[in-house]
Image 1 (cartoon, protein in one colour):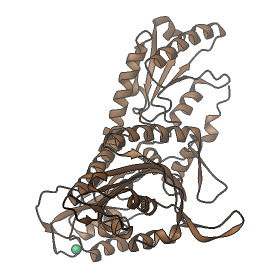
Image 2: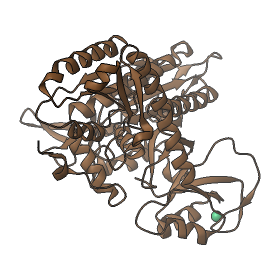
Image 3: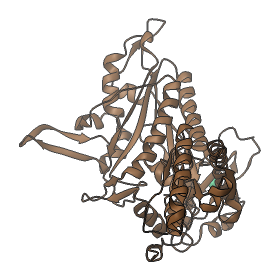
Image 4: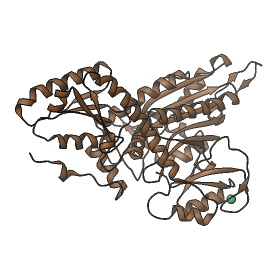
Length: 487
Ligand SMILES: [Zn+2]
């Protein structure tokens, strides 16, 4: 039997990270390019990952008290202009609809790049009294930003996301909500996606247009570049003023509410690939894998076929009964070796091999995707296979986070001189996180960006106040910040 695998090997990660990434996306059938430049097609295997993470995050968001709603994709162009920083930030990348039904529109419509404007327009009509607060809505939708340089999942003209928008009676309550969501995102990324997070505040230059403060969850990808995985914004009263949202407070005064917005997007699919993938392909955390365990039956002689398949089908049914998302690879005409490689490439966390000798001894071989080679293999009795698989999947979920965290820690360096920072960020790839004292001034941040291409990714919260000196200017700095080259 000819092994077709060799002619389709994916580019090794260490050789060409971008080539490797594209190979995985296409070969694992997660997504494809579309005829519209900058837009992608989510294929079922990719969309299933999105659905799994969406469902779980949706549950967690609802637990905080927000409820789902849906607002239109079209927004009157004039709305964007109401908040000065917001228009400056988004105007260059909005798509504008000028014609509908064969006629020129009286007012052009923009395709939402984010929904602050239209949601706040509605909030102004719904919020009248302190009894209407807090108002907390979330929407799952697509947004469009006309990106010039696109990359599947990471930067596309159209992407999917959730955007939460809340209004509160007091500044304090809104600030707490911003941090609550930051923590929801951090937990979700670590527990569900096995992606280790550095959380913190953004610098003024990296803030969301129109926000008073932006908080972020950042992670480090396999090539040492940082990826922003989600953001939570404290909007102050900026949008409430722009959209004239007022309510009668407990002292009978008309005042503006305090607001937040927060979101994560399909970019997280890119984060999963780049955090966990290896030279063999994708490695999916069991929580998001649409196939958590695949059974590969092995036989050479026709006589063995029936007994092996019978045992494999019994194992499949046991796994399914235990709510494990499992499948049996009954394909004929390809070798077991081909199947192993194929499922490894697709990132299935657990492979179960059943051959004639296993059937005879009442056992199966369990091969973990997170640990390569013999070290990742163990035997399980066919009788207790579901329980065994379940505990292995839980271990794999935890281990992927541990592996990723170890990689992030190894790639985070406390740097105390500008020369060392330059050295760390030299070269074509990423340089990991540089953990530096920074005085907080824009000049020093700009110098770093222009000379090393690293940007301020996050200023960690609750730092102990041991003051130091800015690595750029030598002036006193009260905080450390994480800088990195980023996607
Ligand atoms: Zn400085």
